[in-house]
Length: 220
Image (tube, rainbow, N blue to C red; front, side, top):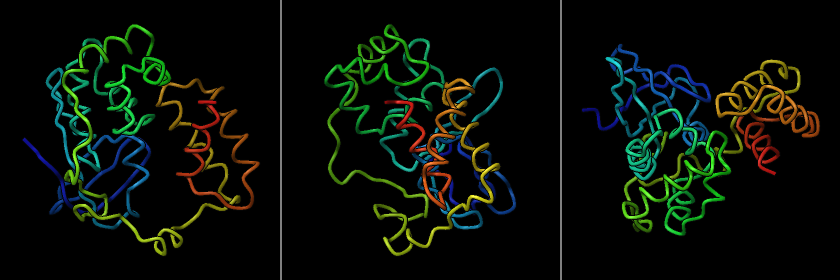
């Protein structure tokens, strides 16, 4: 069983990445929370891995923290929650928020995720409330940059991240729309939210910020 992968980030999108390890490319599915922390293509990346075997196919799911991986695997044990929906939940709710929502039995918070109805939210809380615990202090984590327990970038490095200029708006908007659709929103909802954020954001915008702001509008 694969515990983690450490190699060169060859390609990335909001749904999946390819990690090159000694000439072998591993396709890894990721939640948005991990996508936001990825380094640039060509840089070193290290992720915790959960292997899902379904219908004779093997799929790898990657996470920047052990908490996310553990919650993902716990959710797979809940009736009618598969890997795609579990990943979608972690794309909308942080691991700590989800843990607190389960412990406090906050059905409304869990139900706010696209694709999660009232029955599914209640079932998830019922089946996991005795399996999750308050956040552990000094829990192990592996950042996308490959360091344990460290931030991926410094504030100075964060400021140097490349931004997407409006001249690239068609490609950026299209990528953002597809990311939102993959999370369960309709194309109309996704396009409307992206357009509202994109054209009111000023002269430059990163793809990560575009997706985050669009999600905030959809949640509102």
